[in-house]
Length: 251
Image 1 (tube, rainbow, N blue to C red):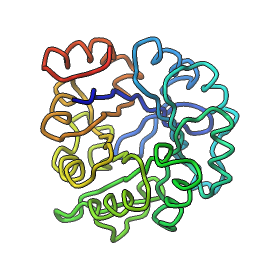
Image 2 (image 1 turned 180 degrees about the vertical axis):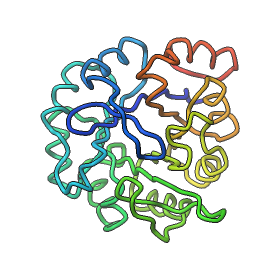
Image 3 (image 1 turned 45 degrees about the vertical axis):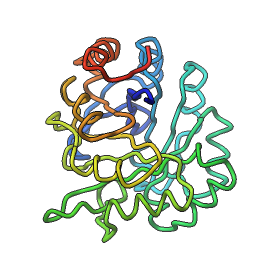
Image 4 (image 1 turned 180 degrees about the horizontal axis):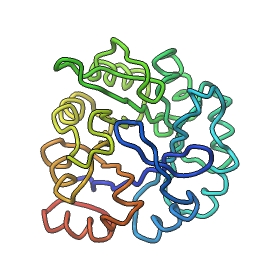
């Protein structure tokens, strides 16, 4: 059985870590470099960095900040936000990213997934799938949740796998920041529809929520932000709890 991964997420705006609810009402959550170092020490399996306004502001991801964080950590590092081309990815990899995450650009141009996979390998390409429930149907949203699409979430995930995505980062906009639990139903639906790993994101508020998303939701990894940033849950304690639930996690 593959071990389940615990992944803190740094949502970055204006060079600082922020956290909101349902993608809005952002509040400051700390210095990204200090948080990254702390998560390494606490036993995080990976780290995700999302420049959440890069696409909306029509600018590139903060390569200098990526480099600063990368020099301080020794765990896999995924970076997303404002990525539109092979060249953008090259810059981020040169500055220390191990994987990149694309969302809006991939919806606009699905061929980008194929191009990046062919150039850097599928293990480097994480497709971020932000979803929202519209009258019982989970559809993809882009531009940091500002723009709804007609893409059905599960169909898009399957297409992305066919195009060469190596991983899915699934975030429920409805659950984001609520601490009421992950979107178990759509997580399970996508996890059982694709053969690539699925990272569940949005809604973590308790250790039980992680257990549920790994067992019922069948996610391969779980991502959270505010509960880690504000020390509501310590990563070491979470892993100890999951082990007691007979869920395989890394030491």
